Length: 217
Image (cartoon, rainbow, N blue to C red; front, top):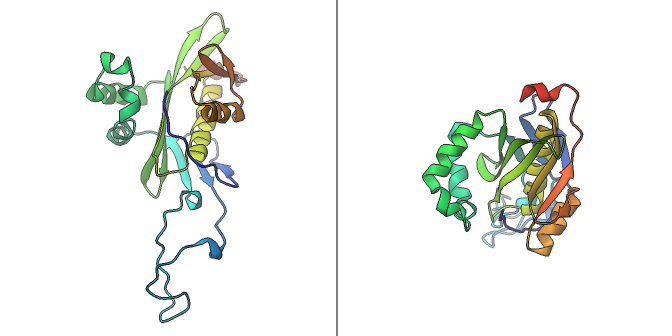
């Protein structure tokens, strides 16, 4: 399950929307004025005093994590092109087939498709698929896809998407959420920070299901 490593923000705060379960906002505090780079056309305070920002700073962005819509699927497939063409995946389905499958998953209660946005631009996405497991004693959620736009902060977006996927899994009665074991040590460390532990070729994290939530499947 490939995704792109990035720089972790210095400080994150999480604000969840009330009980709708489909939207969460992740904010970083604004940077001090001294950290903003300006063009050399006019020094700050000279002339009109208007500064031109010339550096894209992903840590200053506010990310919105929400349930994906049908209209998001083409952008999500384009962003996840390499992941969807990973070894083995290309033998099963091409990009068009992946888009058709994702459109179906958007409307299935056994799946959760999430996207992260910044200024109405798609910055990342994740797919959580549920299956029953006798061994686990309930439903197991598998993070089947996780992609992040390389222009954005991979640590912040990964954390935001996984936390929202965990909340969705908990609401739907899951007892465990799992994902493929990352090969890169820094990626493994990222999952460990989110509470996942390695179990062979997988990493997994137990979740406490909410009472009665299994009936929503």
